[in-house]
Length: 351
Image (cartoon, rainbow, N blue to C red; front, side, top):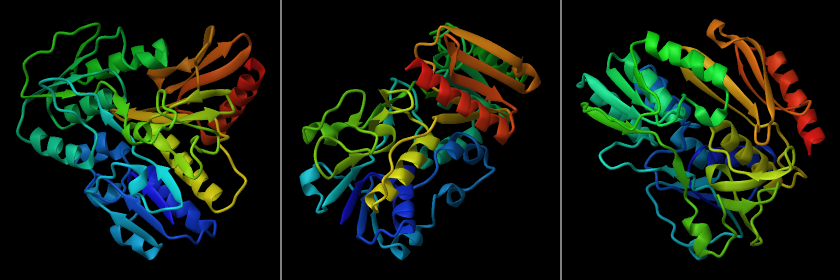
């Protein structure tokens, strides 16, 4: 039997790809959530704005799991690997929001629905944090008619991306839409609700209790195996070896969870596969979508092609002459694929 601890996107994609690849073992999923696995990106966007409903966010309908030989146990705590009656164990416990006293956090489908209801009753909100969750919540609440003050301790939105032209264009977009954007600030004004989006902490406790190697997450190789035979980790909780950049990484985004789950499902069904992709993730605010490709760690210069303010741009990160990452907007699928190949070649040259 395969036992999966955690019921997010990675778990659902593992079941799907394992069955598609011919895997026949029984599967059991235990999750703390009281909903079947769902996609998180809609929570701060379409679901929060009322443009989608909870069923639209589900990876598969609830009865899909039983139809595919997977028992799904909701609202269930697993404290120890020894409590999992399975030959193969997959840890997919995800991450939890960093708390901030006096502020609401945002992570789950229920969090999204609760904030959607509050938005009908309130006039003002303060949102703290300049990353994906904070920025997307601010945009969605503003579109719902809430007056938002957005407080960021960094000098720019999405500071971790190190892409000033992108950030500066977004500053203009937020202010044009009426957001009171306060950069390099810790002054949180009084508001009807305060929401914190200041990062997450990986849920590594079950790995620590089992004596697995844990650093920034549960450490796994490019086939998602921990240092305990038969135990794997995927998604937000996994610090995995990325052979493209030849280093260990932990990535907290939808595309990473989907890829991890899909690839491990095929591996467990007998495929000779491993992590081998140029990482990518996306965000959308006020109808403007951008993507971030690769890994900019160690870059020593940048170049800009186009203009983010015009909706068409490629901001490349270079190490010497090697392209190692890019922030892009308004590019075709073909152009994005070509930039990913630039990055793959650049990462190999840099390494």
